[in-house]
Length: 203
Image 1 (cartoon, rainbow, N blue to C red):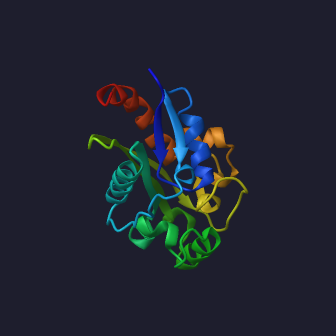
Image 2: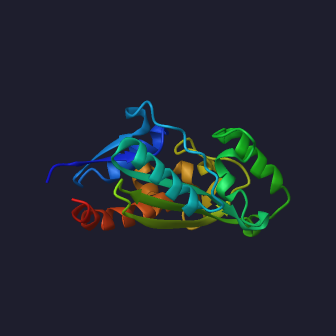
């Protein structure tokens, strides 16, 4: 069976590298939006991670004519009523400014003791084919928000996401270990499990 092109609805090189490595033994050739220069920017107007992921996957599949995988993920902090949620990437105002987002979150949690700083990373992925067929997958990673950033690896909120049983933040984990534990890793595992039969369905 020839490899199907799978377009990741992202320009984030960190994310592309992570997903590419994970799906390398499946009959798909992973590409990113960087390989399709004219692709429109999809506005994330959804109220939930699923709505955003679905919208991105559908629009990118239709724009490129290929199978597309989109994800929306973010951080939910219980002490902040589930914020930043779908606004995780632009929490401090500018999209993708990790440093500012982390600073804002730590400021808002000032004075909150560690055991009350429960949080989770959530990731929803949607794989969409131009024929209109699709499926979704979800992963959740529970943890705490640390009192200060630690670690150089990862991206986003990783330096302040503490995994209590390991005593480390997500930014202190080697990528292989992070992929096994993370919300994205869990959603990807579900995608990987569902993809082979889905590929047969769309042949």
